[in-house]
Amino acid sequence: MKKYSNNWSYEGKRYGRSGCSSQDPQTSYRYQRSHSRGEVVTPPIMERKDKRVSSSPMAMAVDFRTYVDQACRAAEEFVNIYYETMDRRRHAIVRLYLDNATLIWNGNVVTGLEALTNFFEMLPSSEFQISMLDCQPVHEQATKSQTTVLVVTSGAVKFDGNKQHFFNQNFLLTAHSTPNSTVWKIASDCFRFQDWAST
Image: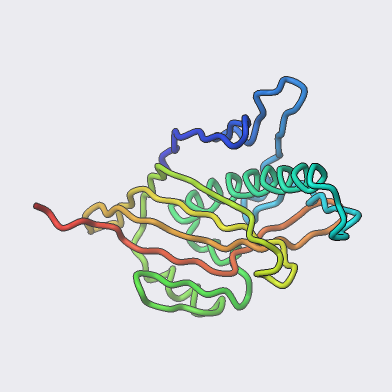
C-alpha cells in the first residue's frame, strides 16, 4: 500500500500517519500498533462516568473532544491495517468484519463472513493508494449506544489485469471493549469506483 501524505487538524490538533498529536506540548496522543496486524486494537475507550443531561457544556465539550481523538486513532490504525491486508494478506481480510457485516461493492451486496470470504477470494490482487482519510464518531442515539465511528477514504486502486480506478470507501466501525483494550470491527462497508467520463 502506498502511504497517504495528508495530515489534517481539528481544533488545534493535527492528525497524520503517526497517530493523533496535539500542538499543545503538554498533550500528546499515541497508540501502539497491534502485533498480529489481524485486527484493530486501541487503548480502552474512556467513557463519561456521569452521563446525566445536567453535565456542564464545558465537560461535554471535553468528553466529545476525547471521543473524537479516540475515533481518529482507531481510524488511522484501521486504514493502515485494512489496505495492507487487502494488498498483501487478502485471506485474512474477513477477520476485520463482524460476523453479520454487510459489504456493498459498486452496488452489489455481500452479507456474512462466508459470502465475504468467497467475494474477496474472487477479487484479483490489488495495489491501493490512499490519498484522503476522514473520520468522525457517530452519535450514540443513532447506534443504540454502540460506540461507532464513520471512516471515509478515497484514493486509487489497481487490480491485476485492470486499469487503475479512483474510488471512495465508507466504513462503519464498532468498538468491542475489554478492560485492557478496544477491538474495532467493520459493521458496514460501502466501496465505489469514482471514475469520471473523459472529456
